[in-house]
Image (cartoon, rainbow, N blue to C red; front, side, top):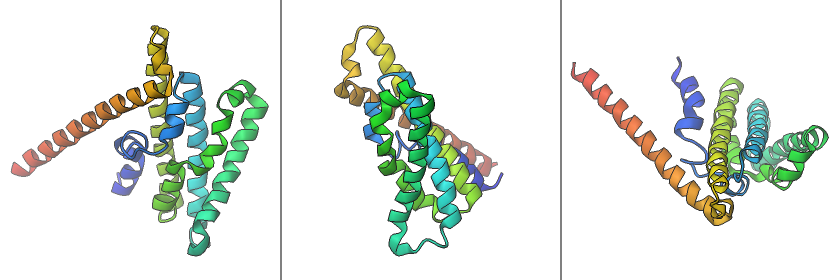
Length: 198
């Protein structure tokens, strides 16, 4: 498999936007109090990320550099509006629950960051894969936090439904995630050294 394709596919896991890049922290903590809200916001963000990555990549050669950020925001806002209309029409209870955070997707650092760092410099295919990977990484991270916090709250530990409890869980999961990634990288490095030694 081509290294660029592999990097785009694995980027959302190895360089997880929440636990490694520490982007999108505000909506992650605010809406990870239960699995349903977390999944809804995660999928909405992933959809916007994938679509905006593709469109920004398609238009990267025609968007003047002097207006690239406003252009990215207009593209992102278009897809956020589509998500908001869809939720209001077909999932009104979810829209009511996470509604205030849907418009904030427009300025989510994950989406703007991927637009600037990746989609504006790569092909449509790679930008699509990057959007899927980062969107999946964000969704998995927020759902994991939602499951942990919901479970702790169900056990009678209401503190974990608060923002302070959310920060505590976020910090512990982030530390554990980065430790696991570090161990995996060390093992891969040792295997590479052993192969070169043979």
